[in-house]
Length: 185
Image (spheres, rainbow, N blue to C red):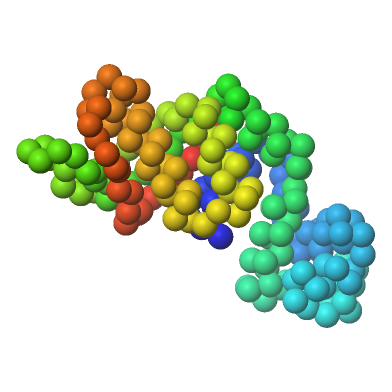
C-alpha cells in the first residue's frame, strides 16, 4: 500500500466500536467466517489449508512475523465494514479530514516569491470534498503518487491560498520527503 493510503486506513480504524481480534486463532476464525471456508483463507495468506485449520483449533498459537503481519492486515481490512463506511461517508460529506504532516513542501509561483522547498510541519483541516476525493482515489486503487497529488492540491487551496483569499497565482504545490503523515476524521 502507500503511505497516504495507510494513513487514511488508520484514520478510519479509529472509528471502530469494537477492538480487532488480537490472537492469531481469533483472527483466523474471523477470516474463515468472512471468506466462508479455510481454503480461500489459505490461498489469500499463502499458507496450507491444514495450517489454517490448526490455527482455528488453537493448535498453533504464534505465527511467524511475516504471516502475523499479513493476517493482521487482512483482518483490519475487513473489520466492521459498516462502521468504516459510515466514517468515510461522514468525512466526505460533512466532517472533512485533518492532515498532520511533516514533509518537504514547496510550490511553483511567479519569480520574486519564496518558492523554495522546505521542511514544514502542517496541521490543516481539509474540507469534505478533499476527504471524498482521497477516499474515492484510494478505493479506485490509485497509487501513492495520485493520493499525494490530491493532498498537495488540498494543501495548496486550504493552507497556501486560504480558500482563494491569497496567493492566487500559485501554480503547483510539491509534497515530497514525507517524514510524518497522519489523518484524523
